[in-house]
Amino acid sequence: MKGVQKEAVKYKIEVDEVSKSFGSQKVLDEVSLNIEYGEICGIVGNNGSGKSVLFKCICGLLFADEGEIKVDGKLLHKDMDMVTDAGVIIEEPAFLAGASGYKNLDYLYGIRNKRDKAYIESILELVGLDPKSKKHVKNYSMGMKQRLAIAQAIMEKPSLLILDEPMNGLDKTAVGEMRELFKKINSEGTTIIVASHNQADIDILCNHVYEMDAGKLTMIR
Image 1 (tube, rainbow, N blue to C red):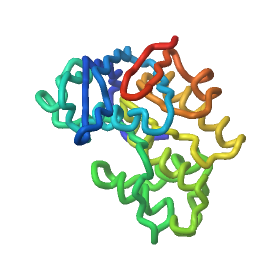
Image 2: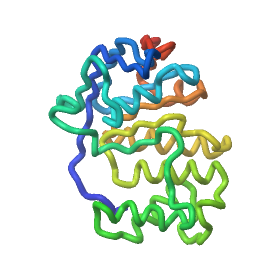
Image 3: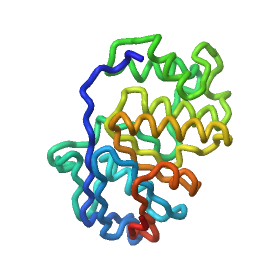
């Protein structure tokens, strides 16, 4: 695949005593986390435990009330506004519902890159979607939308992937395919943070695992 041409950058993530509240509810409570270059870090926890909020803080989409976050040694919201070299799946991704999967990727890719039809088609094939299909995304199954979300996240070869429940809606075969894809991407130097309710995802993919419970983060391996 040709696509984006850039030097590989391996991101290190440092989260130091980060707290975040919404009104009287403390969602993150003095969370600290270090993710080394090129690791796959897993975070497990129940819905509402704070995982998605932590991911949004690491991306720069939310400001922490206390503490600091460094990405590759740069202080978030001081040295950089947000992490731009990242592929992100958090909550339900936004699509152009009345366009095909190809058109969705082509539009987003063209914002920062030269148009590359063959490359976009190869990314769709990589996640198991038909690049020639004219089917509109609004008519996609949940699994097809999830495959398209993964394609969006990986297509610019980011140095960091932040994946919140990336296997949602995928069948057993697709889950296996995506695990192998994430392992391959990681082997090329991409740092990955993943949250999954599927313990097998965590066991197979992750170097280190943390548990989030009521805003508190604890390393479990």
